[in-house]
Image (cartoon, rainbow, N blue to C red):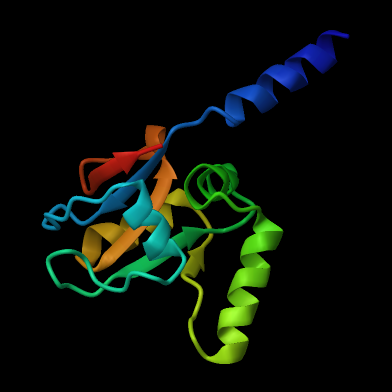
Length: 134
């Protein structure tokens, strides 16, 4: 019984993790939830300042990815796969690049002003700027 309670506590802790959407520190764009969702579904391709957007996803094995998909994109992993399959098949879009972990997202965002990504808020460093949290 104790093991079950510990597992349930761990699962509920993961489902309440705060997700930080991050950009390069020089990016002065203000983004809300709707804008972030449009970016990660390929519907918004430029920041409000006119610069190109390069979205970066965490690998599906990361807990932050399912949190982001549910909280921001309002879709499950399978719904997103179907969505991107349709866009790729029709030539209307390409899914964001996926990277293995938060460290890779931090590296890409901190070195390129066009990149936007998301990570668990507890892993944010001073090398990036948080534009919003979920």
